[in-house]
Image 1 (cartoon, rainbow, N blue to C red):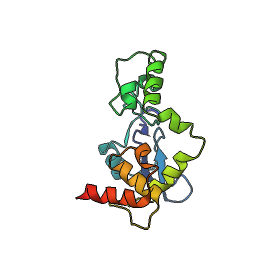
Image 2 (tube, rainbow, N blue to C red):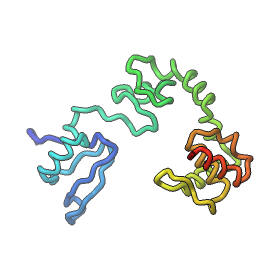
Image 3 (cartoon, rainbow, N blue to C red):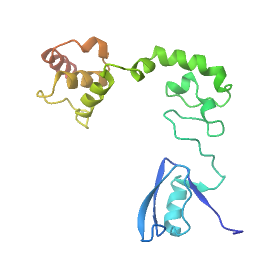
Length: 179
């Protein structure tokens, strides 16, 4: 197979049309997958130009992660700043050097408390957030207290300050902020 060039998905995913399933169909390939041989040249050019795929070895592929990582170092590149949403620090030490700092930041920002939520608050909050209007507008007055709390949290309020208030007070607070 000399001269054959392999292409690998470097984005989170990419769509290609292929016959590898026995019929011509569109398939979704995830990060790290190699493209089948029968991808049309026009589609390959689109995927290359768009940064979805690269020739094998041209771009290191980091594992999928919730925080951005340096693809050459993987999880070892996760730092406290990375957990806050900053770009990965390419000069930091190994994971063992930053693990205490990462744990401290996670506790300080409440991530560990939310991850070990035993009374279902995180699930209830996620269900309420799912009911919020997709365009970011105010929920309908018929929505429950929990939906209004999540709307105000999305606007910058603290959950703990709002969780005990009644629905009418939350609606009035939301309306006062709109003015």
